Image (cartoon, rainbow, N blue to C red; front, side, top):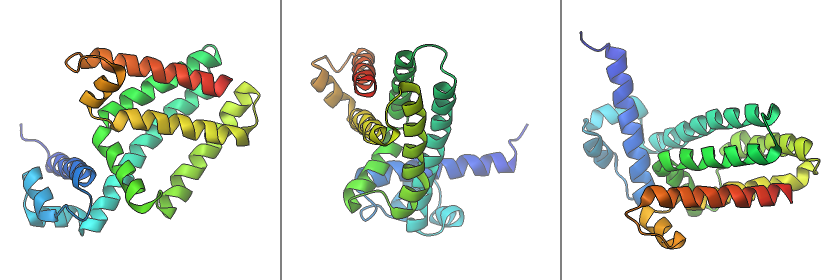
Length: 208
């Protein structure tokens, strides 16, 4: 049975989006052409324009898509924090491990977000107001209520934990291995060591 047209269209659009995110992250927006994105996605130039319009629109859609996925991850965290199954320590442990594994799976997209911040000096105003500030406010209040700490002081702690996670996530596997002092061919063990470290540091920061 043939696949529905809409399914093929959705798969093509997603392939273009994934390819564009990788290329924008690796090369920057200025050094990435629509023609290159089309070639790497195995579609025509017209197809990219059909789905996304201009290169700037495509770049924006790449970032929006990543924030959408991050939003779904944050919803998981909110449910866990609101109704913790065990101690706050175990909640932080679970959140950090899930966040690190999510980051590894979405390394290219997160590199794109970080590249945008480095290139411009910060998150774009729209995303800052729509994503960053509400997220920090949401989690600082939740974590503050559970730990008995001042929510405003928790904002910087939460942001520091996020930055720490991102730095390890965007690193190439061989760099992570070198940082951990482990052989790069045993990357699963490297990831486990980094994950353990991030969970321990996050617990120390949040609960101290």
